[in-house]
Image (cartoon, rainbow, N blue to C red):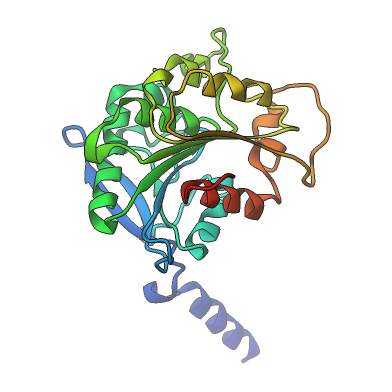
Length: 279
């Protein structure tokens, strides 16, 4: 009898009603190029006293999140921007987390597409839709390889599709032309940074040993951008802030590159800058 009861309990726990499943955001899907679609997960935060503000979040790596119907990432959900999302929402900032297009749902994900003009146009559709919905400013932020996407959008888009500000976190400043994947050679310096006239925030960790995003390169970004307001923010300390020889292993999650255990500090600094103050 006890065995039958135990089996019944296990079966009941596995059959979770749809309404009881975790909901991370509202799933929105846009048709971009031809029959290609792209989805993003949107959270409308409790309105802040300073008015509506949205941040579009672009994770690093391949960027493939595989968002489910509840707007939750089934992949790459350990990225720092995903970990900080609720912190933005709690501070009154709406969030839109962007997934890869339907034709790039692979391990490589965005790959070479991150610097393509069409990618900027795709992101512009997200920005324009969110702006029409919220009636407020829309910023774009990219972490690691996501910085390529954010800089691409900021340098190409105009009008209602253009972001109101751009944030690069642990940006891709150095590429490797000898790497097996061609897109590993890409860096933000391949984009028309001089075309960026909106506010620019560049954030890095002093102990970041990722060979692609060494913090001493941040100054070179602001030497080229023409932002109406610009700042470099160097994060220090943290649980794993130790001196290391630059290497690719340091580009992973839970490294200084990923601002591990400093999410609250970084999210608060980003929110201050977006609201017109200093990081």
